[in-house]
Image (cartoon, rainbow, N blue to C red; front, top):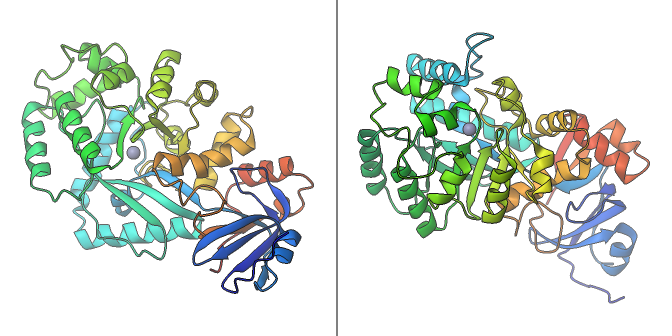
Length: 412
Ligand SMILES: [Zn+2]
Protein backbone atom coordinates (compact mmCIF):
# COMPACT_ATOMS: atom_id res chain seq x y z
CA UNK A 1 0.00 0.00 0.00
CA UNK A 2 1.44 3.39 -0.96
CA UNK A 3 1.16 6.12 1.67
CA UNK A 4 -0.30 9.46 0.63
CA UNK A 5 1.35 12.37 2.44
CA UNK A 6 -0.79 15.20 1.13
CA UNK A 7 -1.70 17.17 4.26
CA UNK A 8 -4.53 19.07 2.54
CA UNK A 9 -6.65 15.90 2.53
CA UNK A 10 -9.32 15.32 5.15
CA UNK A 11 -11.06 12.09 6.01
CA UNK A 12 -14.72 11.79 7.01
CA UNK A 13 -15.78 8.42 8.33
CA UNK A 14 -19.15 7.05 9.42
CA UNK A 15 -20.74 3.76 10.50
CA UNK A 16 -22.26 3.53 7.01
CA UNK A 17 -21.32 5.05 3.67
CA UNK A 18 -23.43 4.67 0.53
CA UNK A 19 -21.54 5.51 -2.68
CA UNK A 20 -24.69 4.72 -4.79
CA UNK A 21 -22.42 3.72 -7.70
CA UNK A 22 -21.21 0.81 -5.54
CA UNK A 23 -22.55 -1.27 -2.65
CA UNK A 24 -22.89 0.37 0.81
CA UNK A 25 -19.84 0.13 3.08
CA UNK A 26 -19.95 -0.46 6.81
CA UNK A 27 -17.35 1.75 8.52
CA UNK A 28 -16.71 3.64 5.31
CA UNK A 29 -14.93 6.92 4.65
CA UNK A 30 -14.36 9.58 2.03
CA UNK A 31 -11.07 11.37 1.53
CA UNK A 32 -11.67 14.96 0.50
CA UNK A 33 -9.28 17.48 -1.00
CA UNK A 34 -10.05 20.96 -2.35
CA UNK A 35 -13.81 20.35 -2.46
CA UNK A 36 -13.49 17.08 -4.38
CA UNK A 37 -13.58 13.44 -3.36
CA UNK A 38 -10.16 11.87 -3.70
CA UNK A 39 -10.94 8.36 -2.47
CA UNK A 40 -13.81 6.28 -1.07
CA UNK A 41 -13.46 3.03 0.84
CA UNK A 42 -12.98 1.22 4.11
CA UNK A 43 -12.31 3.81 6.83
CA UNK A 44 -9.44 2.01 8.57
CA UNK A 45 -7.63 1.36 5.28
CA UNK A 46 -7.98 4.99 4.19
CA UNK A 47 -6.75 6.26 7.57
CA UNK A 48 -3.63 4.11 7.16
CA UNK A 49 -3.13 5.26 3.56
CA UNK A 50 -3.52 8.97 4.42
CA UNK A 51 -1.74 9.17 7.82
CA UNK A 52 -1.37 12.98 7.73
CA UNK A 53 -5.04 13.63 7.01
CA UNK A 54 -7.22 14.80 9.93
CA UNK A 55 -10.08 12.36 10.55
CA UNK A 56 -13.61 13.52 11.38
CA UNK A 57 -15.87 10.76 12.66
CA UNK A 58 -19.50 11.41 11.79
CA UNK A 59 -22.60 9.64 13.06
CA UNK A 60 -25.08 7.93 10.77
CA UNK A 61 -24.76 7.50 7.03
CA UNK A 62 -22.69 9.41 4.46
CA UNK A 63 -24.27 9.55 1.01
CA UNK A 64 -24.35 11.81 -2.07
CA UNK A 65 -26.57 14.89 -2.08
CA UNK A 66 -30.04 14.30 -3.49
CA UNK A 67 -30.93 15.59 -6.96
CA UNK A 68 -34.37 17.10 -7.51
CA UNK A 69 -34.84 16.89 -11.27
CA UNK A 70 -38.11 18.82 -11.49
CA UNK A 71 -39.37 21.82 -9.57
CA UNK A 72 -41.00 25.17 -10.35
CA UNK A 73 -39.46 27.61 -7.88
CA UNK A 74 -41.48 30.58 -9.16
CA UNK A 75 -44.69 28.88 -7.96
CA UNK A 76 -43.40 28.71 -4.36
CA UNK A 77 -45.08 32.03 -3.59
CA UNK A 78 -48.51 30.51 -4.34
CA UNK A 79 -48.36 27.67 -1.83
CA UNK A 80 -50.49 24.56 -2.43
CA UNK A 81 -53.35 24.84 -4.96
CA UNK A 82 -55.92 22.16 -4.11
CA UNK A 83 -57.97 20.39 -6.78
CA UNK A 84 -61.18 22.45 -7.02
CA UNK A 85 -63.38 19.38 -6.35
CA UNK A 86 -63.14 15.62 -5.96
CA UNK A 87 -64.15 15.13 -9.58
CA UNK A 88 -62.02 17.96 -10.98
CA UNK A 89 -59.63 17.20 -13.83
CA UNK A 90 -56.00 18.27 -14.12
CA UNK A 91 -57.23 21.00 -16.50
CA UNK A 92 -59.50 22.34 -13.74
CA UNK A 93 -56.45 22.41 -11.48
CA UNK A 94 -54.37 24.30 -14.07
CA UNK A 95 -57.23 26.83 -14.36
CA UNK A 96 -57.30 27.19 -10.54
CA UNK A 97 -53.53 27.70 -10.50
CA UNK A 98 -53.68 30.41 -13.17
CA UNK A 99 -56.58 32.10 -11.37
CA UNK A 100 -54.72 32.12 -8.07
CA UNK A 101 -51.59 33.51 -9.72
CA UNK A 102 -53.55 36.25 -11.48
CA UNK A 103 -55.56 37.27 -8.41
CA UNK A 104 -52.57 37.27 -6.06
CA UNK A 105 -50.58 39.69 -8.25
CA UNK A 106 -47.34 38.87 -6.46
CA UNK A 107 -44.45 41.21 -7.09
CA UNK A 108 -41.15 39.98 -8.54
CA UNK A 109 -39.57 40.52 -5.12
CA UNK A 110 -42.17 38.30 -3.43
CA UNK A 111 -41.72 35.59 -6.08
CA UNK A 112 -37.93 35.74 -5.69
CA UNK A 113 -38.08 35.66 -1.87
CA UNK A 114 -40.38 32.62 -1.83
CA UNK A 115 -38.18 30.85 -4.41
CA UNK A 116 -35.07 31.51 -2.32
CA UNK A 117 -36.79 30.17 0.79
CA UNK A 118 -37.67 26.99 -1.10
CA UNK A 119 -34.08 26.62 -2.30
CA UNK A 120 -32.86 26.88 1.29
CA UNK A 121 -35.43 24.29 2.43
CA UNK A 122 -34.33 21.96 -0.36
CA UNK A 123 -30.72 22.46 0.75
CA UNK A 124 -31.60 21.77 4.39
CA UNK A 125 -33.27 18.51 3.30
CA UNK A 126 -30.08 17.37 1.52
CA UNK A 127 -30.72 18.41 -2.09
CA UNK A 128 -27.52 19.52 -3.81
CA UNK A 129 -28.70 19.97 -7.38
CA UNK A 130 -32.05 20.82 -8.89
CA UNK A 131 -33.59 21.60 -12.25
CA UNK A 132 -35.89 24.59 -12.00
CA UNK A 133 -38.49 25.24 -14.68
CA UNK A 134 -39.94 28.74 -14.46
CA UNK A 135 -42.25 31.10 -16.27
CA UNK A 136 -40.41 34.14 -14.93
CA UNK A 137 -36.68 34.80 -14.81
CA UNK A 138 -35.35 34.62 -11.25
CA UNK A 139 -32.11 36.12 -10.00
CA UNK A 140 -29.26 33.61 -9.47
CA UNK A 141 -29.32 31.73 -6.17
CA UNK A 142 -26.40 31.72 -3.71
CA UNK A 143 -23.73 29.36 -5.04
CA UNK A 144 -23.10 28.17 -1.48
CA UNK A 145 -26.29 26.12 -1.29
CA UNK A 146 -28.06 24.14 -4.02
CA UNK A 147 -26.71 24.21 -7.56
CA UNK A 148 -29.76 25.38 -9.52
CA UNK A 149 -30.08 24.81 -13.27
CA UNK A 150 -32.76 27.22 -14.48
CA UNK A 151 -34.78 26.88 -17.67
CA UNK A 152 -37.29 29.52 -18.72
CA UNK A 153 -40.40 27.64 -19.79
CA UNK A 154 -42.35 28.86 -22.78
CA UNK A 155 -45.60 27.69 -24.23
CA UNK A 156 -47.77 28.61 -27.17
CA UNK A 157 -50.75 26.46 -28.13
CA UNK A 158 -51.72 28.58 -31.17
CA UNK A 159 -49.96 30.18 -34.14
CA UNK A 160 -50.35 33.62 -32.58
CA UNK A 161 -48.89 32.51 -29.23
CA UNK A 162 -46.12 30.63 -31.04
CA UNK A 163 -45.04 33.79 -32.88
CA UNK A 164 -45.00 35.79 -29.64
CA UNK A 165 -42.86 33.12 -27.94
CA UNK A 166 -40.40 32.99 -30.86
CA UNK A 167 -40.08 36.80 -30.79
CA UNK A 168 -39.42 36.67 -27.05
CA UNK A 169 -36.76 33.96 -27.42
CA UNK A 170 -35.02 35.80 -30.26
CA UNK A 171 -34.70 38.85 -28.02
CA UNK A 172 -33.07 36.85 -25.23
CA UNK A 173 -29.31 36.51 -24.67
CA UNK A 174 -27.98 33.24 -26.06
CA UNK A 175 -26.84 32.07 -22.61
CA UNK A 176 -30.44 32.14 -21.28
CA UNK A 177 -31.69 28.57 -21.50
CA UNK A 178 -35.34 28.00 -22.43
CA UNK A 179 -37.57 24.96 -22.62
CA UNK A 180 -41.05 23.94 -23.79
CA UNK A 181 -43.93 23.26 -21.43
CA UNK A 182 -45.84 20.28 -22.83
CA UNK A 183 -47.17 18.76 -26.08
CA UNK A 184 -50.70 19.92 -25.17
CA UNK A 185 -49.71 23.57 -24.66
CA UNK A 186 -47.07 24.16 -27.30
CA UNK A 187 -47.19 23.89 -31.08
CA UNK A 188 -44.84 21.36 -32.73
CA UNK A 189 -43.04 24.22 -34.52
CA UNK A 190 -42.37 26.03 -31.23
CA UNK A 191 -41.15 22.84 -29.54
CA UNK A 192 -38.81 22.17 -32.48
CA UNK A 193 -37.55 25.77 -32.40
CA UNK A 194 -36.81 25.60 -28.67
CA UNK A 195 -35.18 22.16 -28.89
CA UNK A 196 -32.93 23.34 -31.72
CA UNK A 197 -31.87 26.34 -29.64
CA UNK A 198 -31.19 24.06 -26.64
CA UNK A 199 -29.09 21.80 -28.86
CA UNK A 200 -27.00 24.71 -30.11
CA UNK A 201 -26.52 26.03 -26.57
CA UNK A 202 -25.79 22.58 -25.11
CA UNK A 203 -28.59 22.97 -22.56
CA UNK A 204 -31.16 20.54 -21.22
CA UNK A 205 -34.61 20.42 -22.77
CA UNK A 206 -37.28 19.47 -20.24
CA UNK A 207 -40.89 18.78 -21.15
CA UNK A 208 -43.98 17.62 -19.23
CA UNK A 209 -45.07 14.40 -20.91
CA UNK A 210 -47.95 11.93 -20.57
CA UNK A 211 -49.10 13.35 -17.25
CA UNK A 212 -52.74 13.03 -18.25
CA UNK A 213 -54.57 10.85 -20.79
CA UNK A 214 -56.30 13.87 -22.31
CA UNK A 215 -52.96 14.96 -23.77
CA UNK A 216 -53.24 12.20 -26.39
CA UNK A 217 -56.93 13.01 -27.01
CA UNK A 218 -56.00 16.61 -27.87
CA UNK A 219 -53.12 15.73 -30.20
CA UNK A 220 -54.97 12.98 -32.05
CA UNK A 221 -58.59 14.13 -32.11
CA UNK A 222 -58.67 17.70 -30.78
CA UNK A 223 -60.82 16.48 -27.87
CA UNK A 224 -60.69 16.21 -24.09
CA UNK A 225 -60.20 18.64 -21.25
CA UNK A 226 -57.19 20.39 -22.78
CA UNK A 227 -59.19 21.13 -25.97
CA UNK A 228 -61.95 22.61 -23.81
CA UNK A 229 -59.38 24.58 -21.80
CA UNK A 230 -57.90 26.11 -24.97
CA UNK A 231 -61.36 26.85 -26.44
CA UNK A 232 -62.37 28.76 -23.30
CA UNK A 233 -59.27 30.93 -23.73
CA UNK A 234 -59.72 31.51 -27.48
CA UNK A 235 -56.47 29.64 -28.10
CA UNK A 236 -57.95 26.74 -30.10
CA UNK A 237 -56.99 27.77 -33.63
CA UNK A 238 -56.69 24.49 -35.53
CA UNK A 239 -53.21 23.57 -34.30
CA UNK A 240 -54.83 20.52 -32.65
CA UNK A 241 -55.51 17.81 -33.66
CA UNK A 242 -52.06 17.67 -35.19
CA UNK A 243 -51.88 17.03 -38.91
CA UNK A 244 -48.98 15.88 -41.08
CA UNK A 245 -47.41 13.95 -38.21
CA UNK A 246 -48.35 10.66 -36.59
CA UNK A 247 -49.78 11.70 -33.24
CA UNK A 248 -51.26 8.33 -32.35
CA UNK A 249 -48.81 8.17 -29.45
CA UNK A 250 -47.44 11.25 -27.75
CA UNK A 251 -43.92 9.79 -27.43
CA UNK A 252 -43.87 8.78 -31.10
CA UNK A 253 -44.88 12.32 -31.96
CA UNK A 254 -41.97 13.78 -29.98
CA UNK A 255 -39.61 11.33 -31.63
CA UNK A 256 -40.78 12.30 -35.13
CA UNK A 257 -40.49 15.96 -34.20
CA UNK A 258 -36.83 15.37 -33.34
CA UNK A 259 -37.25 16.29 -29.67
CA UNK A 260 -35.84 13.17 -28.04
CA UNK A 261 -32.16 12.73 -27.26
CA UNK A 262 -29.91 12.35 -24.22
CA UNK A 263 -30.38 16.01 -23.23
CA UNK A 264 -34.18 15.75 -23.11
CA UNK A 265 -35.87 15.18 -19.74
CA UNK A 266 -39.44 13.87 -20.00
CA UNK A 267 -41.31 14.68 -16.81
CA UNK A 268 -44.18 12.64 -15.28
CA UNK A 269 -44.51 9.85 -17.92
CA UNK A 270 -47.53 8.40 -16.11
CA UNK A 271 -49.36 7.10 -19.18
CA UNK A 272 -46.86 5.30 -21.39
CA UNK A 273 -47.28 2.13 -23.41
CA UNK A 274 -44.52 -0.48 -23.60
CA UNK A 275 -43.73 0.76 -27.11
CA UNK A 276 -43.47 4.36 -25.91
CA UNK A 277 -41.09 3.34 -23.11
CA UNK A 278 -39.01 1.49 -25.73
CA UNK A 279 -38.84 4.63 -27.91
CA UNK A 280 -37.72 6.71 -24.92
CA UNK A 281 -35.11 4.13 -24.01
CA UNK A 282 -33.72 3.89 -27.55
CA UNK A 283 -33.58 7.66 -27.89
CA UNK A 284 -31.64 7.86 -24.58
CA UNK A 285 -34.04 10.54 -23.37
CA UNK A 286 -34.29 10.80 -19.59
CA UNK A 287 -37.43 10.29 -17.56
CA UNK A 288 -38.26 12.14 -14.35
CA UNK A 289 -41.09 10.89 -12.16
CA UNK A 290 -43.03 13.04 -9.69
CA UNK A 291 -45.03 10.57 -7.55
CA UNK A 292 -46.15 13.15 -4.97
CA UNK A 293 -47.54 15.56 -7.54
CA UNK A 294 -49.21 12.73 -9.45
CA UNK A 295 -50.97 11.60 -6.31
CA UNK A 296 -52.01 15.15 -5.38
CA UNK A 297 -53.56 15.66 -8.84
CA UNK A 298 -54.94 12.10 -9.08
CA UNK A 299 -53.44 11.60 -12.54
CA UNK A 300 -52.32 8.02 -11.95
CA UNK A 301 -49.15 6.14 -11.05
CA UNK A 302 -46.21 5.73 -13.43
CA UNK A 303 -45.27 2.16 -14.32
CA UNK A 304 -41.79 2.18 -12.76
CA UNK A 305 -41.31 -1.56 -13.21
CA UNK A 306 -41.94 -1.26 -16.96
CA UNK A 307 -39.48 1.65 -17.27
CA UNK A 308 -36.81 -0.36 -15.44
CA UNK A 309 -37.48 -3.34 -17.73
CA UNK A 310 -36.80 -1.02 -20.69
CA UNK A 311 -33.45 -0.01 -19.13
CA UNK A 312 -34.73 3.41 -18.10
CA UNK A 313 -33.66 4.47 -14.61
CA UNK A 314 -35.97 7.42 -13.95
CA UNK A 315 -34.90 10.49 -11.99
CA UNK A 316 -37.18 11.89 -9.29
CA UNK A 317 -38.61 15.38 -8.85
CA UNK A 318 -40.93 17.03 -6.38
CA UNK A 319 -42.64 19.31 -8.92
CA UNK A 320 -43.83 22.60 -7.35
CA UNK A 321 -45.44 23.20 -3.99
CA UNK A 322 -48.65 24.04 -5.89
CA UNK A 323 -49.14 20.31 -6.54
CA UNK A 324 -46.98 18.87 -3.75
CA UNK A 325 -47.21 20.48 -0.29
CA UNK A 326 -44.42 18.26 1.13
CA UNK A 327 -41.81 19.23 -1.47
CA UNK A 328 -39.42 16.63 -0.08
CA UNK A 329 -37.29 14.19 -2.06
CA UNK A 330 -37.36 11.89 0.98
CA UNK A 331 -41.16 11.78 0.77
CA UNK A 332 -40.92 11.11 -2.99
CA UNK A 333 -38.72 8.09 -2.27
CA UNK A 334 -41.02 6.85 0.49
CA UNK A 335 -44.13 7.24 -1.69
CA UNK A 336 -42.45 5.46 -4.58
CA UNK A 337 -41.46 2.62 -2.27
CA UNK A 338 -45.03 2.26 -1.00
CA UNK A 339 -46.51 2.35 -4.52
CA UNK A 340 -43.90 -0.02 -5.97
CA UNK A 341 -42.91 -2.47 -3.22
CA UNK A 342 -41.11 -4.70 -5.74
CA UNK A 343 -38.67 -1.96 -6.78
CA UNK A 344 -35.52 -2.44 -4.67
CA UNK A 345 -34.62 0.32 -2.20
CA UNK A 346 -31.16 0.66 -3.79
CA UNK A 347 -32.81 1.51 -7.13
CA UNK A 348 -35.05 4.13 -5.48
CA UNK A 349 -32.03 5.82 -3.87
CA UNK A 350 -30.23 5.71 -7.22
CA UNK A 351 -33.25 7.43 -8.80
CA UNK A 352 -33.06 10.25 -6.24
CA UNK A 353 -29.32 10.74 -6.78
CA UNK A 354 -27.42 9.32 -9.75
CA UNK A 355 -30.33 9.18 -12.23
CA UNK A 356 -31.09 12.86 -11.56
CA UNK A 357 -27.43 13.81 -11.93
CA UNK A 358 -27.29 11.98 -15.27
CA UNK A 359 -30.51 13.58 -16.49
CA UNK A 360 -29.08 17.02 -15.68
CA UNK A 361 -25.71 16.12 -17.27
CA UNK A 362 -23.95 16.66 -13.92
CA UNK A 363 -22.98 13.12 -12.96
CA UNK A 364 -19.36 14.24 -13.21
CA UNK A 365 -19.94 15.96 -9.84
CA UNK A 366 -23.23 14.77 -8.33
CA UNK A 367 -25.14 11.55 -7.78
CA UNK A 368 -22.42 9.26 -6.39
CA UNK A 369 -19.48 9.15 -4.02
CA UNK A 370 -16.48 8.46 -6.23
CA UNK A 371 -13.11 9.96 -7.04
CA UNK A 372 -13.44 13.39 -8.64
CA UNK A 373 -17.05 14.00 -7.54
CA UNK A 374 -18.00 16.97 -5.38
CA UNK A 375 -17.34 16.73 -1.67
CA UNK A 376 -20.69 18.46 -1.10
CA UNK A 377 -22.37 15.36 0.20
CA UNK A 378 -24.59 14.68 3.17
CA UNK A 379 -24.65 12.58 6.30
CA UNK A 380 -27.97 11.62 7.79
CA UNK A 381 -29.19 10.08 10.99
CA UNK A 382 -32.29 8.20 11.77
CA UNK A 383 -32.56 5.72 14.58
CA UNK A 384 -33.75 2.90 12.31
CA UNK A 385 -30.78 3.32 9.92
CA UNK A 386 -28.35 3.32 12.81
CA UNK A 387 -29.78 0.04 14.05
CA UNK A 388 -29.61 -1.51 10.56
CA UNK A 389 -27.69 -4.75 10.71
CA UNK A 390 -27.05 -5.10 6.98
CA UNK A 391 -27.06 -2.99 3.82
CA UNK A 392 -30.48 -4.21 2.72
CA UNK A 393 -32.08 -3.05 5.97
CA UNK A 394 -30.14 0.23 5.82
CA UNK A 395 -31.37 1.06 2.30
CA UNK A 396 -34.89 -0.02 3.18
CA UNK A 397 -35.12 2.27 6.23
CA UNK A 398 -33.38 5.14 4.48
CA UNK A 399 -35.77 5.22 1.53
CA UNK A 400 -39.03 4.24 3.22
CA UNK A 401 -39.07 6.48 6.29
CA UNK A 402 -39.34 9.99 4.86
CA UNK A 403 -37.01 12.76 5.95
CA UNK A 404 -34.39 11.54 8.47
CA UNK A 405 -34.30 13.19 11.91
CA UNK A 406 -31.02 14.86 11.02
CA UNK A 407 -29.63 15.83 7.61
CA UNK A 408 -26.26 17.57 7.67
CA UNK A 409 -23.76 18.55 5.02
CA UNK A 410 -20.21 17.30 5.16
CA UNK A 411 -18.25 20.14 6.86
CA UNK A 412 -15.83 20.70 3.96
ZN1 LIG B 1 -43.96 20.54 -13.55
